[in-house]
Image (tube, rainbow, N blue to C red; front, side, top):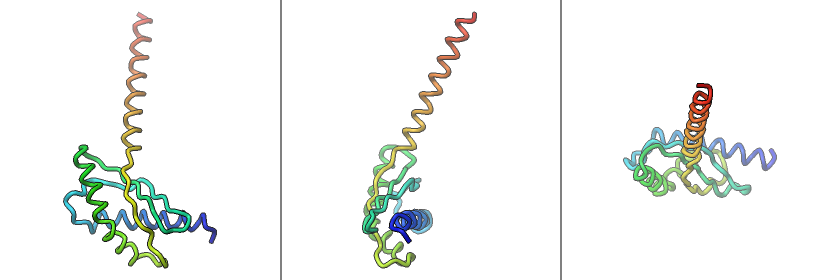
Length: 125
């Protein structure tokens, strides 16, 4: 298996396993509604940057990220037990605001379209 395939496969496996752990096995009340958007695994498979999107207030986002950072050893241990690899990557949790940015851009586009239609109607009258 090529290195590129191995990295992609490890990313996918990590995403599935960490998502299941967060959903079913995390008991930390700080961790709110969060989902993994992407995992970047290093070529040597020793590190994995876990990008997490969190729904909620700024305080809830901070608490969720702090809870995940505190639980990373627990999560890594469970992942290591489930994956049949020699080495379990070190997990690095990072906040991902790409979904929020997408929603914001979508709203801006909707506003521009409404303004454009409004101007068009004014010109026609």
